[in-house]
Length: 322
Ligand SMILES: Cc1ncc(COP(=O)(O)O)c(C=O)c1O
Image 1 (cartoon, rainbow, N blue to C red):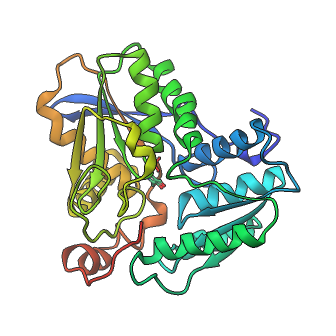
Image 2 (tube, rainbow, N blue to C red):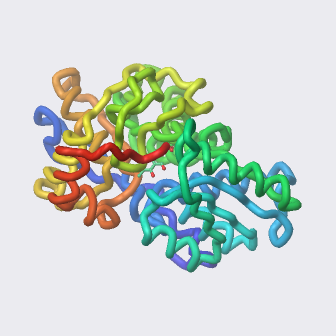
């Protein structure tokens, strides 16, 4: 394989067969953490930028791309924009992981860290106010708005869902963690067209409001929201499974021990959800779940017992803001 751009380092057909994972049945974990920048968000970043280009809205060396992200999308957009010749401004907050901020800057992104939360709408509200100001003063600037951008969903219909449909003759269950819900909406739409009887299971953390849950404190990034995303209006999962953050962390640790791979928190949540549904699986069912990223960047959080004690078992009154 010869590549011409690092953005081509996407691995579309990597599935980990988890032998006898749930009540003696195998499950298949679609691994997205080997994509360059370390997550499924590389595909989202490519999809949203290509959508602008196809609609004639963005032109390299002319357009400035703006997005609010504290993690995986920010670093993915930094690489994609650098490789295509776009200026990229990422608006983030003090909860962002320092390694991500350094990585974004090394790829040439301009990173704005808002200093304080809005008294009513928190850090997310403050980040959106800053984006509004930039849009007013920067000519040729575009806000991607991943929480409402249809290209976020479509990219997963055209890639993630299609990749699963290519690999399996039938899929009976798919488990997807919900953040912006772009992955969930796209995978659900794509797989339901191919496998009409599939059960689409949305997985979200306790404290997330996306599917009507009570807002609450959350410390694990990736999935869950404090404001229902616009994209989520178009999804009707067959079931929503809510997983506590402690159960997520226990699932991550058990997976490292039993299947020898460190995975991110959102993967831990879907693994816990599969186990919860185990009694519903028939012998011949094909069970697929999406693993958005790996665990190496969480060594000092979800894999650190003192962090888990301080933030999950006996948390102070802090929370992430999206
Ligand atoms: C690690 C991780 N898992 C899951 C998700 C959720 O994906 P989506 O935003 O498509 O719902 C994200 C989104 O940023 C993520 O970073």
